[in-house]
Image (cartoon, rainbow, N blue to C red; front, side, top):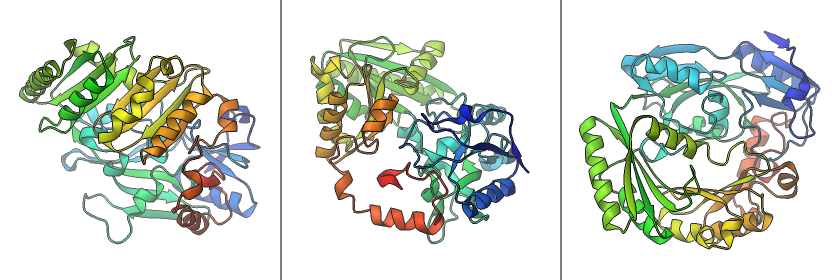
Length: 417
């Protein structure tokens, strides 16, 4: 069923772009029918769940229909013994986690806005959090997808078992693609048992180099912690800190805390503390939500090889630069860092982007004021890599094959795809 909803189109606006109408779908078949009709009429569609990720990507080149997916919020099949769940793309992560917790399980994704974000929006942006060190990203958790296409079809990929891929893994085509090749309507995921115990080790350092050395040692050790982050000006702490998320059985957590504490002390930490219970949970909430939904600020995601993380963060360690880069969260195990500029300083953003590109990495402007976002290429703010991407022709060919009329989120993805 397709229905025009009572909510005004202005609630689905992207900057000054307001859709002509809003359509709410209550089934996968309705989503496919809506896309097909829009394609035939030459309309541009923006899929919409909770709207928490709509700040990402470029502004769409056209915007006629907001496709509200929030009614696809049911758990379709769940077998706790198999550690597999299938759910509609409109279900919120919080609702899914509550149901899984009833069986002592959880989905190890901890992206921003997890209390309100939908499963579909989280996967479409490949949103992730600090737990990726131990559990990986959404790409590692999705077993199967059901996707609505502008041709009015429902296409299935993968299945309900861990090893089911033959030929091309089409699941990964849609994860992180901003819905530009199809709209996810149903997702099958592998889940994990809830850890029996958790704690955090917080170590304060006088310099970035010391924090990076210790964080790298812990992240690449046999301890297998859930997360190892490097942070500055997060949760009210101006110093460089190493945050170690211990998780597992009580004995495992005690071993991780003990060894991480010893290594931090050996590495020159000024202080080392342990957090449990509410203090532990509060800290990681602040890390996950760092730099999000703040008025006037800009959040830049930069990446590099893990062994180059110190060089990537060096501009933020300089006293003068900290006037512009006012906060840092970096994942020690995979070379991903989030730099926040409270004043949305263009110079700081361009400088950090250029550093990432020079190190062989990338930069994406995830959140920013409208005027700043409109004046920069959000996928490469410094312009260092956009002119030499050798994968753009292939990406455009995929877009042409799956969405020949440019119905889905036109212009929002890399290279204006």
